Amino acid sequence: MKVLITDKMANEAITVLEDAGHEVVFDEMDHDTLLREISNYDALMVRGRTKAVTEIVNAGATGNLKVIGRAGIGVDNVDIKTAAEHKIPVVNAPTGATASVAELAISHMLVLSRHFTKADSTMKKGEWAKKQLKGSELDGKTLGLIGTGNIGRLTGKLAQCFGMKIIGYDPFISKEDMKKDGVEKIEDLGELMGKTDFISLHLPHIPATHYIVNEEMISKMKTTAYLINCARGGTVDEKALYDALKNGKIAGAGLDVYETEPPKDSPLLGLDNVVLTPHLGANTKEGQIKAGTICAEQINKVLAGKEPDFCVNKKMMN
Image 1: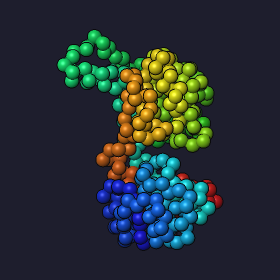
Image 2: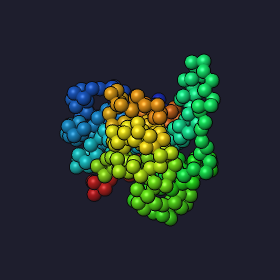
Image 3: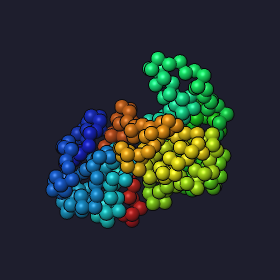
Image 4: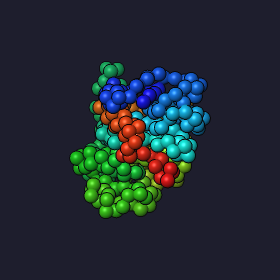
């Protein structure tokens, strides 16, 4: 069968598809070209650049399209509802970037607590700013996880290695399951916000989580606390965060994702107490290989008439 890949993908992922006997075409098509060509393919495999929006899915459904694969965890760029209406499974790779994102979240905590960015910039200017750079340890601090899925749990496990206490907020994970990973379940988000030294988000951006960290929630944080978001833009109200950072209501923030990417005109760019990275969460060699190969394996299963392990719109198709 024919598989169209429209975003750059690890070679290992392409090999998985070809080894299954499929013809693989890589072409970074623009919207109009994809709309015209998608019906000729049995599968579409994307990352974050390609937007498999309603008209793309509908066009594919008029032809041969049988499955859409997202090489990563987030499916914000795929119309999963329309795909479900056409009985087209949307598969992803929820475990592909787990280690990469969790490690980045921990990195943000370390960079903020030890003032790495200022230390680096002053050293390169020939300054010895040691007295201005007294940091704090992670040991003994409390980390609050907003979302305790695969990435959240691993972030917690890594943080435990630094001697941190872990608490978590997640309406979908039981107290017992959290306890297995050494996480104390907190039922109220506001309570978690006030108890923690570091808060790390690990959840998708959907209507229910839009601005889940808003002005009210930020106001509950300690003045010494840090907010980390390596999950999805739109889960944090950036205006409220900016005001809190500028006015010293919280100590700092580490952001890898933004409401608008890239955040060219964001006032956050002008603050010294925020560390910014350009959506690097899954951007590791290992993460890209895992995400691509896992997604390719899921596509192979669907094309072979088998049940995929990771189908994000399965319930919608029932």
